[in-house]
Structure formats: structure tokens, C-alpha cells
Length: 382
Image: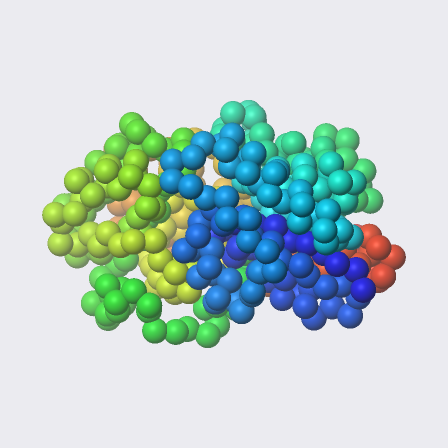
């Protein structure tokens, strides 16, 4: 029985790793060893609880206001003794957080193979998004198994000289988690959301929190949302607000006096998934939401100038609109009032997954150790 350590600490990581942990638990040849870093303490714990996952170790690295360098240093210092004591056969990290990269680095220093989930996402510059683009490029250099979500991601890796035998195209595990969650709807945990679907109003779900959105870009977004709410009194906007004061201090003054805007605290994963399913459209700067919403037939307007997830843009279900106020207003208005345009985005094929990414991931890990065969790549590649 091989031990596979998973290390994660943010809410998006927890959501995407949870299906892998559950699949590892079902494996006859592998067993998971779950370690959390604790960046998103409350949200992390909530996701683990929702999926019935109990971590074996908690690095507890979070402190208010700490910088990237402190996050990295704490992760390296606190994970290393855990690796030395448990000596897993491999370490799985997901995505592009600084803690994911440094966890991989800690394993590399201990000569433990690193398996990178969601490998191969790329933008044109290492500085955008920052620091995620740098983190994932660095992880590629030290990873032994590259679990790419799409064929586009695989091609990015091949273009960088990665051995094709070390790449498996799995689909994205966020789709596994989402489909499982919306298939069994539960009452909203946040009482403010109860009854929203019964009003008959079109519902716009908005999220904005990324580092590159702070300051003027976010101020322009808030200005646009205020204007949309004023122009469209029969439309309900819902913004789950990140706890960061830099986010709160922009959106609250701009929007909290409007009757058709609901500002909530960050939502549980189950609440957010169900709210996405109920939404008419989604406006976001989140990478994960770009993958999730199309699975539920929701058009997505992305508050960014570029994306490491171009597949849905090419498919037509996601549109990059940046943070120019007038552009945001125009694009939202088109989706609200032009049925043909709305249908063209809502009915586009989601290129990110089919709900079987975790099974492909575990099969690829088993093959790495000579314990089984891979499943066919997502998208039909051999």
C-alpha cells in the first residue's frame, strides 16, 4: 500500500483535492495522508467537513496580514518535519498557490516525487496573475507527474519540454466536486439566501477578490455594479465578499445602500454551488468559477484581461471583459436583454471536465508506481 500525501490550505484547493482524497480512499493500492496548511481557516474546515475529510496534520500557517514570504517560509519549515516523519511515497499538490509550490519544494528537497494536479495552465507573462503564474511554472520543473486538466494544458507542458509519458489529461476535479454537490441540494446555510430563487428575479452572482483586482480595478467594478443595480431594479445581485479589508472597503460603501444588492460573507461551498446553479449569469475574477459555472450552463463574464483557462473562452461560454466600468455594464446588459446572445453562451460545451477527473488522477498515480493502468485521457486522447 503506497501512501500519497496531499497538501492544501485554501478553499479552492480543498474543493479540487477533495474528490482525489475520496478516490484515494477507495483505491486498493493507495492510501491518502491529508495535510492542510490552514490559509483559509474557516472556509478550509467547512469544505473538509462537507466532504467528510479529516486531516492527519495541520501546519496552521495563517496569520493576519502576513506576506507571501512568510507563507512560504512557514510552509517549508512546518511541512519538512512532517515529510521526514511520515516519508510518503509521493506528494500531491494542486494548482498555483504559494503554499502549493513550497510544499512541492519541501518534498523535492526530501527526494519525494511531486504530483501536480491542474498542471500546465499558462498565461503569456509570469507576472499575471501574480504570484500564481510563477508558482505553477516553478512547480512544473520539480514535478514527476503532471496531471493536466485539458489538452491545451498538456500542449503547454509539451511546449516546455516536459516528457509526454509523465502527463495525463484528467479533466478538472472541480467538476467532480460540483456535480456531486448540486446533485444533492441542501437548505442554504446562509439564511440571507433563502427565498432568493422564489422572487422570480434574474440573479447575477459576482465575485471579486484577486490580488491584481485590488485598488482601481476593483473600484471600477464596484462603480459598474452600482450602475447595473440602479438601471435594473428587477435584477438581484449577490456578492459573497472576501474577508480581506481591501475588498470590503471598496464594495460595501459602493453597494450596501441598494435594495437589490445582497452583500454576504464568504459562503460555504455547498451554498456557493447551489447559488451558482440558481444564477442567471456570473461575473467574476476567479479562476475556479470560470470552470464551475459553465458546467451548470451559466454564462461567465471574467473581470480580467487574460486567463490561464482559455478553453471556455474559445468555446464561447466565458468572455474576458476586464474592469472597465462601461464594458462591464454593456456586457451584463447584453446577457440580460439579448436572448440569442445569452443562449449562445449558456449552451456552449464545457471543456473542463465530465466528473471523472479524480478517477483518472488516481489511475495515473497507480500507473506511476506500476500498480495499474491509466484510464483514457479526458477528451479522448490516448
